[in-house]
Image (cartoon, rainbow, N blue to C red):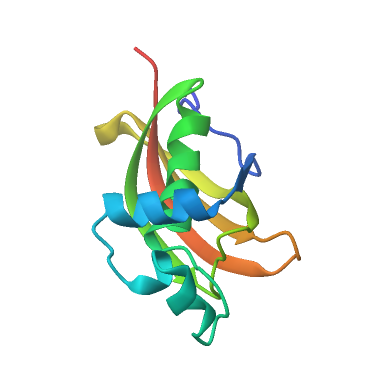
Length: 144
């Protein structure tokens, strides 16, 4: 009997680094209609518990999720199915984030013509602090 095809590799890691800027924090928050002044008004944010402008939670999580599509689309057809993301601490307007996902498990799903893939990941700031932690399930299909 033939072994089922395999698209991804258990233990496979994808990683990227992204530097935030005050301009990107403001424009991203505007784009997603997050009008919280913590993302737009530097004077307001300086008086807050954070002491400065912070990114909308949607910004680091969007980059975190997009890393999977970017990585796996280099050799396959990925499709995000499920994400469980936890925001552990604020992401500041001058942070440099390193996003990393690791394939924990994958198995061929004949009815979907691809690997159901389970991943765990973190987003870590320049000080080594975890700002976001997550788990994901994606479908990774071979290219036609």
